[in-house]
Amino acid sequence: MTFCNPFSLRRRGIMGMNQRNIDYIGRYNPRKLYKQVDDKLITKQLALKDKIATPALISVIKEQHEVAQVNQRVLGQQGFCIKPAQGSGGKGILVITKVENGRYFKPSGEEVSGTDMERHCSNILAGLFSLGGKNDVAVIEALIKFDPVFEGYSFEGVPDIRLIIFKGFPVMGMLRLSTAASDGKANLHQGAVGVGVDIATGQAIRAVQHDLPVNLHPDTQKDLLQMKVPHWERLLYLASGCYEMSGLGYLGTDMVLDSERGPLLLELNARPGLAIQIANDQGLLPRLQKVESLGDQTFAVEERIRMAKEWFGNQ
Image (cartoon, rainbow, N blue to C red; front, top):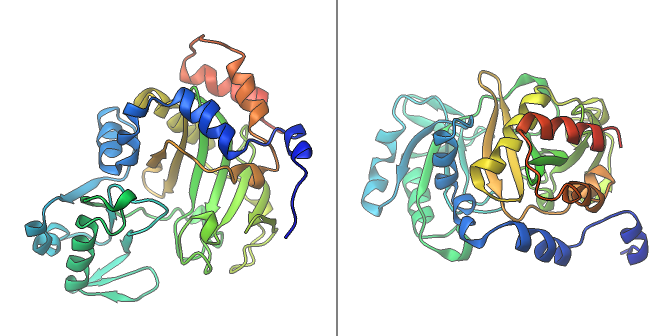
């Protein structure tokens, strides 16, 4: 195991966990607002109210007696996703990509019976996948239709785009690609690939897996550094607008590209991880301090994006 010199990390503007928690999350994120991002159902309801594009809500199962209705509630759907409203780290997410003659299939081709789905919903309600093991609700939402522009850049799962938003300014971005090691999930700690992207253009600048640089996707051998995220301007606009929607000063926005609807907001995170710095080979601190230097001035979304692209692009 190797360790980095703390002075070297400081010179490069790398932000550590304690500084993030105290100077940014603690200072800019009012605790009373955490619930609206920790609960994916509340986030979705806020997004729908603010006309922020998000996957359609099919149904919500709130009580155990409703579990037996899950087959009825997804009737007519060709695919869908069942997730805990208060889950974290991708736990408890069941994705059904094909429905055929009343039979349900996961992206891997594995069949899931109606009884399996009922059991899964029951486990969600009991808090098996929730933060702190609290009782939860099962959110059923429309399946994201994989945009073919990412063909070969992800294994089984849908790539997602994370942007760190500080006081409404997009300060750093990363594409997260699932792998066989991550079991189709986009979580870096489970083995997904993180691709740092230029904030001005969406062009890939560096890729890592398990914190180590990689140039090719480990399963598909696709050249990761040739990738450029399409709809980049819309993604920046969507993410920056979540500042007004949530009221949080420091947040992570997770978005996906749908082949029919374009960029969609998946969820918000009040405590986004710091691995985005490794994927970008850049520290967050200089960018956050640049935004802080503006004081309490307010800017429209378009102006914030223009300034962020000028300050943080091509670094």
